[in-house]
Length: 385
Image (cartoon, rainbow, N blue to C red; front, side, top):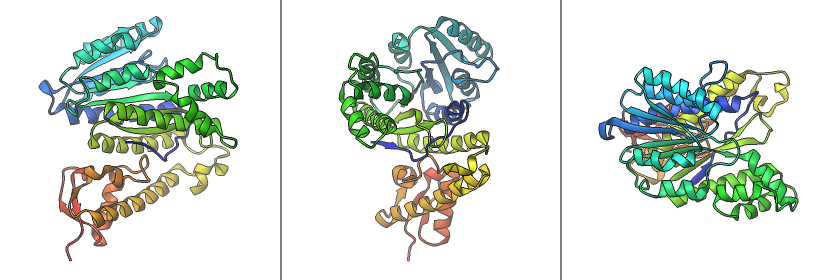
């Protein structure tokens, strides 16, 4: 099942990268700890297939170094990080960053060349242990046939865990849709997107969403959602689609597509997205003209925006919890992850859910039948009369 989050992401400069990197920081380490504790020798493989230089020129960590940092911080897992970069000049800089962390004891390797040339050997090396793939290309991504083959092959079982976070370019989809709408059927973007999507089905989806009144944004959104659903179905996974924008009112730059086979993954990713959004908003801050911006209709201070978003999310989760116990007499929260976050996936985090649960217990609409180590582990039901 694939869902689309309701939280459009704002941006200034490159804050779409701020958001993406915040997710990596907040998700990769918990993922490694979660799956590594039960993995043979606690091993976990984490791969960045389009790692670039690993670090920005100003010294700020890029995705590659963030993964290396996560590998170094993992306390209940032995992370084996593999970073791949196609461009020779960027690879040489990446290799230097990797060597720094390897000297500190981090298990890390850098590979030069296109990720598809290394994918089979990377997956083979991760046989029997959890695997997290981060695929963040500029433009077209891996062919659907290649990615689905890897995910639907030996790694199709629920265990060992396999998860994917990838960038599905909205800019590229809009460009291809524009060429299609203009009858430029010889445009090179069309066969490229055919390969990424695993067929020409996206063309009909894009044109249908475009319609007489719609925009290319609607087409990019429709194609991204359908792609996520198809990849999730082909690989036996759950899928989440997250639109990433430069600024409110702008069209998405890309969609993050997250795939997992575990409701725990869906839950932890929900927490990571919501907290990354707060981090991004705080980095963004109010600017001139924001008083007229839809985001700042709640007020012109970011803390007020976050506060009001959280109030909305708490009340929605409260309603969701009440709905769960109305139809189930005993249920662990993580097993109803879709219902818990319904309508506020990308806004509600663990604290939101915990606060809403406390409200529900206080008003007598929900009872905690078994206290868990984390809020997701709580077993709830209706209060006994």
